[in-house]
Length: 518
Image 1: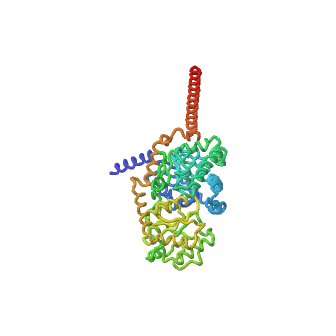
Image 2: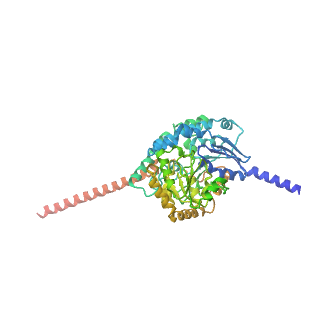
Image 3: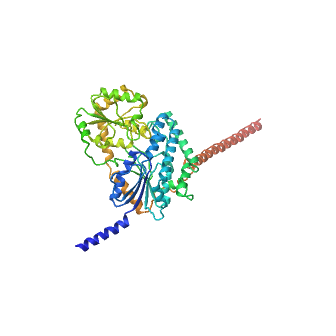
């Protein structure tokens, strides 16, 4: 019996040695919702026996032994205090180039400091270190260069829809009307002004990337940390094996190449856990219903204007419901039906039977959590993809949209009462949840299966079109269209000349006959 057990253990060890990989996971963006989305993937890969080194701004508490974590939590100070990106977005709401420039400047500084950390430098300078796979958040191309340093394939990850530039760079078709940029505040049935704005934005994005890529700060930073002989970031970007995107066909209808894998549909949802006793008591006793209000982790509620906060306070005071409000500070003028909490286990709160409405900033994860909990929404977007998500909520009948710039007590009260007293919104949410869940594999199962596919084949080249470097004029068929137009004009010209010459000859013949007759 002991011999059998020994043979079994040796066999297991042999199989693990052959099949289990060393994975470097890099998630540089200081955003708790982003980090939270990927955690089930790290835990799932760990459960499969893979060994992970995770660079993250939010280290997992009680991480398994074979997940080594490098702490980048200092990046939150740069985001919220030094750059205060939320305020920049609010102050320049319709100036997309300035918003993008601010994001880029912020991420350049964050990535520079992340790569300079002693733990990262030790990893880069260790000649004996090796990895079988890099899994990296797509936000900053310099981080893709880890794949060159360790000579391993990489998978790019996105906790939300990615920019059209990235789609274009990897061969997916882009269209300013069918697939507007995620930062634009519209999604379907675009008016002429919106179509014009979307088209100009796409053109600006292509030109901006084309003429700043080679000499950009990112290129210099990449060579600083990964060596002067590093290939261009454009080449490294196109060397990706697969891209995992947190989208779902129910909300995101666009053609994708086989190298793109949709992992949306509640991948980050955790098993239900008991609520804290005080919170549970508040929700249990709210038989009249509870409105849950949260602006997520990236928008600080205390940064809102006094007028906007007062509009919320005045509205909540008149509601016949309880209100659970995630707020980082106390609100002295709040009414007795309002409970202020600095942090909440959002998934478990939304699952509570008495929660009847979610007032949300429309982050991708918050939106999914509400849908899978069958809770309709009042959408109050602020930054990033939230405005487009708000359009998806309205277009699918899951709730109503309120512009924060025109929000008043009357507008908010009308929206809340409309949703809470009209069962169609809750029915629509339940129907969409059923559609999203009705798939052969969950997003997590797909992510793990395709991750191990890339590991087994040491990278994936056959999913990507070989002609991604087509010049724009060839991609748009401008040379072919020009040739056909020229050929058409030439044909008309030749036909015109023939008809004209024949007419002249016939006219001369007719005149000659007249002379002879006379």
